[in-house]
Image (cartoon, rainbow, N blue to C red; front, side, top):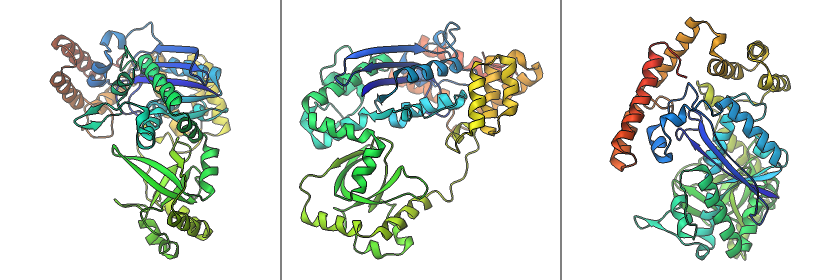
Length: 460
């Protein structure tokens, strides 16, 4: 299978409320020889307030954000869809991509009404995260890479790790530069630890992960818990009710399961939480760091056999996994409703039409869509792309509502606010990430954006 190494640079760190500004990707064969590449940018969407820290780190200027020769975010989403279709099937690979870049991609498709938001997992595509790969290397084959340190601790930052391992001229925090650095690390691991590389590849396929787990044999799971890597030796003990992608993994080294298999449901539920969890959830579709355990100790094998012999325990663990979410409330913001249900076939067909329809027809199509989330997002697209379709009074109300969001409390929901901007500018100055002139340019740009919206004029 080919690899599609990719990376985004964005307006901030929250995929739900920020947007991508740059996408770069390189398609390679399984020896990492380049087949094709793409490197594109888009302009800032009217409803987005960029974080000064992100602008400073990625060297993005206000003029770059407002470059009218660049595609809009809506147009950018369509370009990405076409490229993924063209390169499929491939293994979509990034650095910290499962937690960040993949979410940026899904939000890009969701907020711009693409009919499919899971394209990197369908049509034969798979996913792999090189950050997880290098962390596994650290725990299982440390001599494979050189490990730079910050404050006496190993760092997994790409801009530190790639140069320490022979990648010269790394243009960090540029999407294409980070893609090239990621490919370099993949090649190095493949060449220096081929058996481990093969094991890493087995984690990118959900069906393979489930098959290995459900065998019941002891395995190794590597977790990243708030920046601290932990190795667990355990085995499969169930799958979440109504969600086959969440499997349960019992830590066989930490404790004997004999008492828990006979325990009541509340005790099993309690085993899923706390500092010393006996059972952890494994997302089988998110490239887990799961490996075979060679020559497991007799006691570990015996404990695994106890769990494997109790399918009733598996079922109760599955129910306990689902119970974790029974009191979860639906978020209020449409951006956070991305996983609140799949689209109907009828709505998907309308979204396909929406992408190619003329602006006036798009407005009519929105009235036919049943999903309220999509109608809200579609209305915003029309405001951004074709404001001439709306009366001045409507545009003014939309602008004022936007200003209210930008001037709301700092931790309201994760979007950038004027208070966050001020704090960011102070940090940029303290860290020496920009000159005084650059800082003032960013401050003036963001302030003008907020003032324009507050005055009832939609930013462009």
